[in-house]
Image (cartoon, rainbow, N blue to C red; front, side):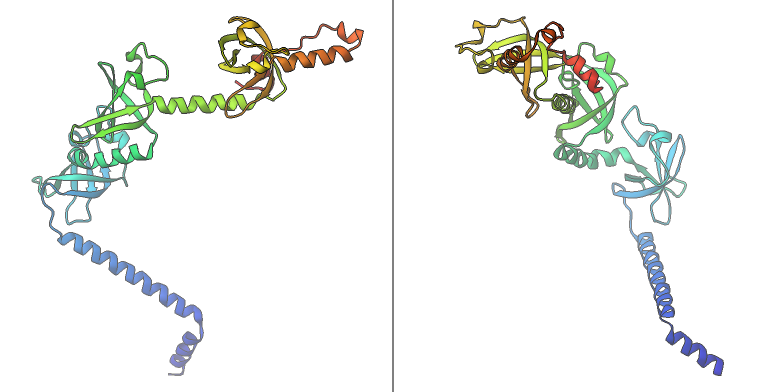
Amino acid sequence: MKYTNERKDRHRGQPGFTKIESMETMTMEETMKDYEQELEASFRKINEGDVIKGTVIDVNEEEVTLDLRYYTQGIIKAEDMSNDPNFSLMSDVHEGDVIEATVVKTDDGQGNILLSRKEANSVLAWDVLAGYMEEKKNISVKVSEVVNAGVVAYLEGIRGFIPASHLDISYVENLEDYKGKELEVRVITVDQAKEKLVLSAREILREKAKEEHDHRVAMIVPGTVLEGTVESLQPYGAFVDLKDGLSGLVHISQICQRRIKKPSEVLKVGDKVKVKVLNTNNGKISLSMKALEEQQAEEMENIDVKQYGSGESVGTSLGDLFAKLNIK
């Protein structure tokens, strides 16, 4: 009896005992809760046409087996998984995946529930696609076929159309080049009533091109002298092609030291010019020919005869500049 009392006293006096006891109680409660959920699930009525969730427990080339937390398992035949011709059970489905599918038969003759993911997709996928469009989410798809004026790719099991004009920033000459190609796209049209899904890669490509352009512009240091070619004349100034996909504006007030009414008084399209970078704000390059004239005039005043005879070039090409900066 003394030993029993000592055990009781020791238990009462040790906080750790209360903690262990509490943990055991929590574990039992969680186990009971799981058991109650499984018991409740096993008694629920499943009808044909219901959309239910299941966890993949087995995959083979013919079918997918799902744990439905029910007294029997669910089976999805390969032909009932997806309309996408690029879909592969062995590559695209894995153990542990959670799949929603429609009940086709409550008993397939072997005690299993026969399911169809294709039927569930025809209902559920449209809401998912609408969400993608609202979020402007970038999604990877694979082109499965070429059709008139565009290509086809499947998304969430739904057949989507990508117009030729939305495949690239520039004109696409041969659509066949895109067959089997993976593209990053956004959903731009979702119409369940008309079963219409339209995808686009163009906006993503434009954004990436702009990011790259702005980065290259930002790497150009104000004060740098560049060589370029006049590509167009406007009433407010001249645009100069700096090569490497970049161009800048020489405002009319920055063309020369004397006042002019229009750029054509001094320049014509095709002229080779040297310009000084004034600034690179918001992805735009502001240039000046006048500042370079003023700089050269000042240098000429201060330069001695030996320096003047060196023959070193004042300007550089943008390609040379990027090469020095190790920009590709």
